[in-house]
Length: 280
Image 1 (cartoon, helix red, strand yellow):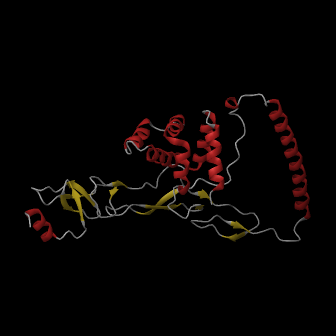
Image 2: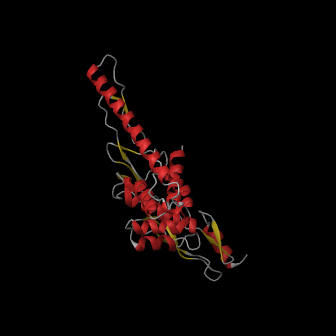
Image 3: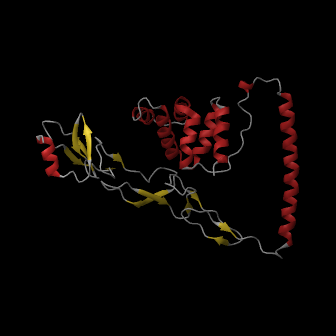
């Protein structure tokens, strides 16, 4: 048995081992990172505690720690639930009177619905308010007003349908590339964390970078996303999209679709909307 193996056996690598340049080294414990790998001549490596606002939650051989999650992103309506430690990331929760539409890690909360006819199910951290239905035998004035508004709405919808039919007929000879002002189907569901990988794949790095630049994101943020995943455009796009959502908050999905549309990427915008509306 050589010296390095003997020392590691004595040391009892309680968190496991990893191979580095042909030498078996001990993993660093949670809450630390590898400052210096072990070698054949220096059989015991050096682990250092994660610095402030960073963490590693598992035994590892990383040469740095992960940045703690921030719960103070503007417009995200989040607040700190559990503080970050060297061995555990921070967790966020929705502010009072807000809810998250995702059962997974939440990055954006929405205001709870306000009811005029009473609350059937109260708003929680993961579900919006459910309002009570209007009781029978109510004020007939309200019923008359409602029917009148419905009648007016039907007329307006009919006029709009006619207008768009005339508009479409008059533009039949317009080239497809010059029709970026066509209406895109409206969003029916909020932007959730689980949607981001699919949306990032639809948009791609070049167009996502263009959206970020047009929407005013800092060049350093964009460049960091690229450098964090050199040669992996998919991960670059996903990280930049996550940064975009955190920065834009509740306006993220609207800003994303409108920016794609205004930059001549109507087909991509339509695919993003279709993906969001079809998500479970």
